[in-house]
Amino acid sequence: MGNSVLKQHYETAKKTGVLKISQKKLTEFPTDLKQLEPLLRTLDLSENKFTTFPDEIGSFKLLKHLNVNHNRLTSLPESVGDLSKLESLSVCTNKLTVLPHTLSNLSNLKQVYLSDNQITKFPLMLCGLRHLDVLDLSKNKITDVPTGVSDIHVTELNLNQNEVSVLSEDIANCPRLKTLRLEENCLQLASICPRILTDSKISVLALDGNLFDMKSLAEAEGYDKYMERYTAVKKKMF
Image (tube, rainbow, N blue to C red; front, top):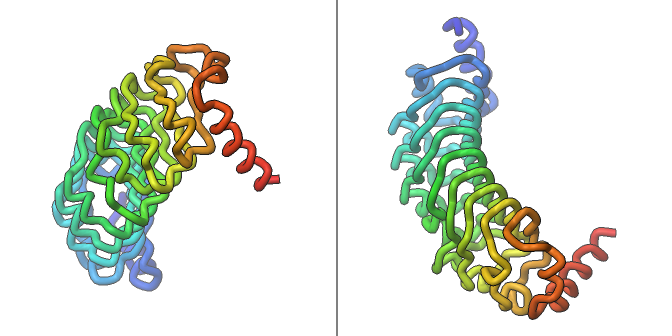
C-alpha cells in the first residue's frame, strides 16, 4: 500500500478521529500511526495480515473502538489494558490462544467479540466489568464454563461451537444474563443444573447440537419456569 494513500487516511483521521485501513495487506503496525495518538477514537485494522500487535497500542488513550478482525494474531499485548476508554474490542477470526489479564482494567468495555479463534479457557478476567453487555466467544476451543463466572455482567453470552462439557452452576447467578448460547458443544443433559432453569434470569437458552435430545430438556426440573421467562420476553417483542 502506497504511503500517499496512507497519508490520505491519516489526514482524514486527524479531522474525524476515525481511521480505517482494512484490506491493505499490512503485516506490521504502521509507524506513522503514532501521530494520531492524541486524537484517535476508532481504529479499524481488520482484514490485514498482522501476526503480532505492538505494545504501542496502549498509548492511544482516547481509543473507544478497536477492530482487528481477520488477521493472524496469536496474542494481544498486555498494554491493551491501558486503553481505559475502550468500549468495543473485536478480534474475531485470528489465532488467539490466550488473552491478557490486563483486560480486567477496561472498565468501560461494552462489547467484546472473540469468535473464531483458538481460545481454550473462559476469560474470567472479563468478570467484574460492569458495563460489559455482549461477549462473543463462539467458534473457539473452550471446554468448561468455570466457577467464578457469576461475576460476569453481560446480558448476552455466546459460546456456540466450542467444546464445552462442564457448565458451572455459577452461571445461574449472573446478575444480568438473559441470553446464553451453547449450541454445538459437548454438554450432557445432566450438565444443565436445575437452577439455570428455575432461578436464573436467562430467558433465551440455546442448546441445540449437544449430546442430548432437546425433547428431554422439556422434561427437566424447572423447565416450566424457564418457559415462563422465555414466553414473557417473546410477548414483549411482538
